[in-house]
Image (cartoon, rainbow, N blue to C red; front, side):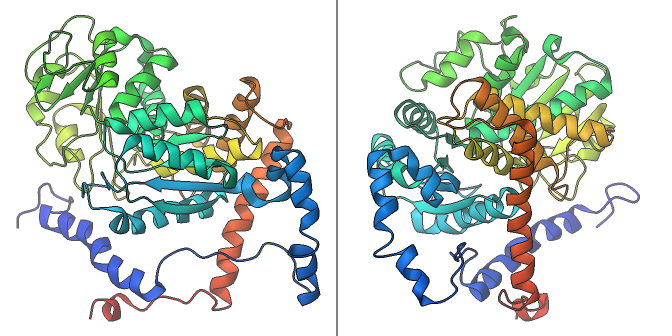
Length: 458
């Protein structure tokens, strides 16, 4: 196949690269029989210690917690436990695949929680699709966890579940497909607008796709200070506007609410109308590469910003977007510049809210995390091809944790109050412990090295 551009990979090469992780995933999962395990964190000098850790000694902390349930955050690992809850109805790009099939994703989430944030996360996949029952289950699980991460739940019920659990539970509840995506998108936009020399709060921003990610992104952008009327939403039927009869308060109250607040100029028409004259486009929609067309980008304002976040193939190839006039292009892929990756958000954010034993996690905490992500990248240097931190820059996670913890304290939802220095030292130590523990287990062969790719693919 002819190369798309001299020095650029061909489409076949890109597709082959995109398929490689999937080819290796099943044999690797089979080799390890899953990704997570539970190991002790306390000293066991001899079996005599079991009298302290279990019966009869354990009765003493039980009585303390009975007298004051919040002592469970001091005397058990509850303070660091997060439930990763899913009904398997919207798993990655696979759709409704059921709870058992969702387990590898939830285990993967738990792995990222631990390695990047030092958080002990447990995959919990539910055999129910009823939103109110999921809320009840989360409430029933609350005594064992310091936080809940909702994952891969279809819309619009994901909005209902998040809203109701946040109302009813006294621990942070987070939906990563909403809040996580919105956090990293905001961080990327903050730095992208700095580079192009525009004021984001005054600019026109189009969101292509009206799923959980972009609906929450709209709310977070508005909360951060973008004028609601300057945001334009587009879905598969075209521009979202107040006269659309197919968007009703009864069927999707959250999308309806956004529809009433955005698109002040009353723009209508097909999706390409949402591109005309706007400064930035954030797409979280159908994988491409032709979901977004070059001719649409050519109608955008000068120094246009494009976030094409669909996986595994972005809505438009980055070089096509650049040829059409985009100055900054981000995608969801690690092999292109400017990866917009939720993993930059949730490990550090949960580290922060868990360290102060917060009662909730708010959009303001997402904004605090986004600003810290943007600050970290700016301090070490940003450019058109490097607007966000990368996952291997581990120092960003304790900084993000501190920002969220301080915001929790400021908003009066923290059970404990620590100084900025104490929070940073604590978060850094916990994250380093998780990383070094994994490295030691690998070094001593307690986590086996995987077979070669050739052996795995036999």
